[in-house]
Length: 423
Image (tube, rainbow, N blue to C red; front, side, top):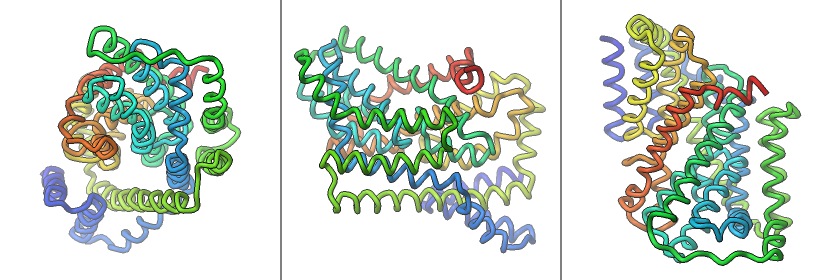
């Protein structure tokens, strides 16, 4: 009964428009006071949230992605990939997904990936006759690869909440990320073969390929350094973010695409996003401490393990709940509200927490492109200067592919677990 009342209170606060950070933190404070517990746990929770070396990776990855975004690196990357595959049937769509995957391996942000590649790909594809809704849906979905292919900001947060290895989480995201990108590419090829009309792109000559590839090479090298350094154990995720930010500055200034004004914009936007993320984290920390003292996660975990003995049924229920929550909550809020409640149940059901983290992130990807609050929908809407409905019409095939990926990694867990544990 207490759990239901707290859940209803949280839904009520969110439904009247109170920001997620203040809804979580405020309700947590009320619960602590109501239980006659010390309110000094609130400032302690705030301090313990931000006093974390691993969390330093979040602003650094945001800085790196925003510097690359403002420096126009996405255009060079897309142009280079297009020169190699643009003449294929559906080649511009393939180039878009490959560009999203490469930028995802640098930024760790779905919004930055969608905005960066969308800025250069949308007009190019529409001018070539691709259906507008297909193009917008492709970019919105392609942008979500930014939180699955490492580095990933949600995986950093998941690792902090569950105290699991962030390196293992990063590596576990590679297989499903490449699989999902592959499914998107196959869909682009099939769409071009059996779907709408478009104007084929002429095959680029070898000189064009050489020039564009050389210009994009530093960005690709940056992705290799960031991921390779983590995989080889040369540096931690936080150190890789710092190195990536420093190298991104070198790249954009050496290309001559960065100005002092653009750099200031990148820093300010990164600061705003960082403050938002940290406030939500702090609010979730207070709320999590309160519900733990009320023994709500423990009771829910006991109820789940007592009534659900099949991991498959548990996964189906979790996915349905997250799919519904994705209609109303943004991705980070889903992560911070649900993971502390669900995580204690995993061991009892024999579910690997690293594997579950990958599944959770894929469900967050779905939330990013489902209305009415899917963040990537609004990003692409703003970039394309179009109505939200046109973007929404294009994303449904990609949501089905994401759910299909969930089924695949359940049936074959090694899609996620082979790289971190068997290579």
